[in-house]
Length: 300
Image 1: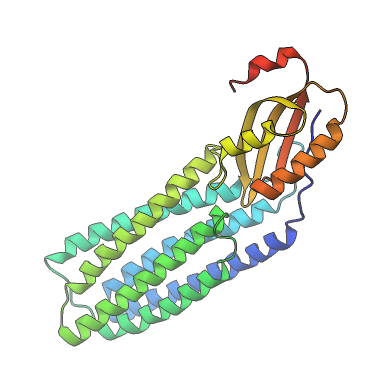
Image 2: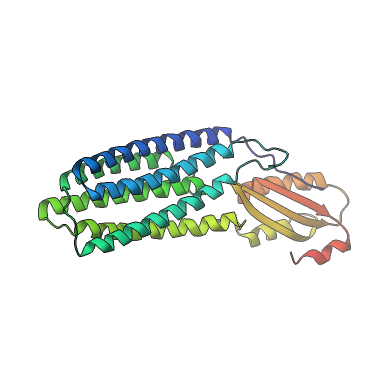
């Protein structure tokens, strides 16, 4: 006997997320083109390097956008859960991009410390200041749901890291302009690279866990098992599995042993509703068993 929680219609949220990713990706692509144009016009390697970094971020945002679109595809005979898990693969790729770019920036910064190139400071300040506005505005667009949505969280971290990079570039440009300290450019790049790498490793660890069907962050499986075992008529609980289907959607399967022969439908309806309210589990499936032959399966 199985029971499923009737989940809410997430179409409005998916539409909003898709539009946000589209807007953010296009705005950042436009800013990257402007930054690269000024870099070529002024011969500023700093602007060209940051434009390359932003291009990588645009690719990451495009992955998040594509994942949001894929997540809207309906379930089929072959893909019975739909394409929700695309929102778990996107932050993994996003984190790898962040780690790669922060490493490249750190290597370039170390190489430049001894012989920093001459950089026109004023274009760096102006274009980097524009980057702060663009990235903070884009981060505001994708801010919703970042606590439980890895896809949005990846994009949000990307944008906040970019805003920090732009702020550091402004500070470095001002220092080079007023004090003539050319070494500020590689020094600040090294510092920001370390900050970006630290954030990226956290996202990488969590996205890897999600793709390996780990219990989602914020859910204690011991508490879930104890809750199921405490329900009326339950003698034993086994084969409890909890994993993420995609952004904000959590699945559970569990076998519960009940020796009573009646009331299973009401039990399932009540328990499934409380799983959603207490643990944010939107897709629970409960299998009710009875008989002594089921008791020895509690090790799973």
